[in-house]
Image (cartoon, rainbow, N blue to C red):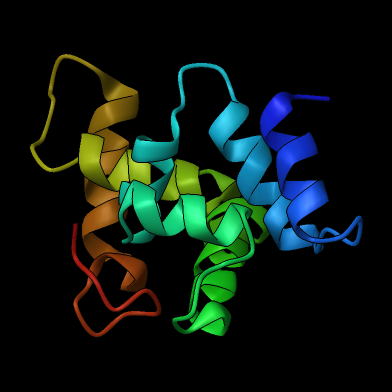
Length: 128
């Protein structure tokens, strides 16, 4: 159990919601940081810190939705099947340009271009 997890658990009086635990796990993951996780879900690292410390006074429901969407719910990719929303975003960012030297990346370029999650009016409402 990480120090971040213990601190969050104390701040939430021992009743850490599952989505906050998922947020802690994402921050503690290999190669991740609180700042990187914050950017993925559209917030600053200060907001993430406030959430973990249970002192955020803004729209906690919106943050919960973003955490659940990015770190807890799966996405059905037309090319890969069931993946995490985080993996979906990574592929969309990777597939901005076609890559003819890699058949897999080329396939992902075409799949991502057609995917409704990759449109401004799609389920995520962003085109990153």
